[in-house]
Image (cartoon, rainbow, N blue to C red; front, side, top):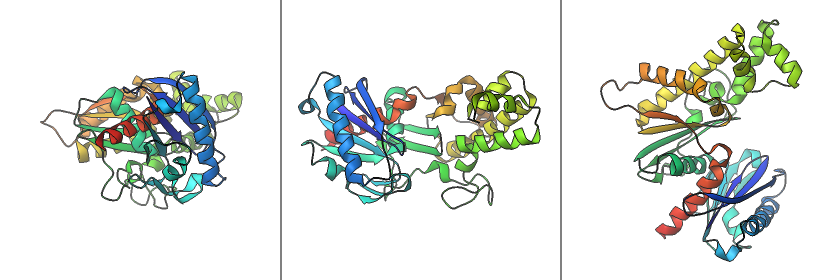
Length: 317
């Protein structure tokens, strides 16, 4: 059995999995990211013990622990070099966790961990795999020959920060025009609110009033109800997503590309137009094409991926 930890800016999620990534038990707790990393790790350790007990095993039955963390992670040393939304800088989280447990403990970037989770359940027999997650930001991971691609320095595969439009929308990274600034749920919300303001008669305004907020679902649900402005909003967003995916496909030509994150729950409403756009504009016109799929694990991808990446690294030792 293995433990996977998905460490987020809002919540810590912990799961016990078997050797195939099947979750036996899971728990979560608030991160309270303003705290010192030592306190966050203490809560992670407590959740590990609780989750193992819920799976009817002890920590002595756990072969390895994997941690998926936002930010720049040195996976060799287990140090979170920098994670702005966790207030961490040069935080040795695996060494700190080692104060609680005597077993192999590994750390990965959270997007890489999620990618490895989806790869494990969706495409473990393929040699080239890309995962893109559409959430608060745009994350991603690349798996080549069963290995997470990290670049020479561990900071590779930041898919959300390739340029979609030069001098375009401001991105949180400091640059302008990043894929994330157009394809994230944050960007979709901003586009939705802009369109709502332009068309006060749109159903999206009624939706927002009844729900008390604007979300990534607003445009999709109102488009399904036939609202023309919502349809336009949804279609503009989907084209932006597809445009970025075309670039990723052109660079990597992966056998399988999986789309995850909250928006991926829209299923074929998202997948069909994206696949059509990629088919039309993919530079590759004559060779076999990338298969594009919707994620299967959703919120569990980080847990499963962290656990399975830890398993992989334990086997390699």
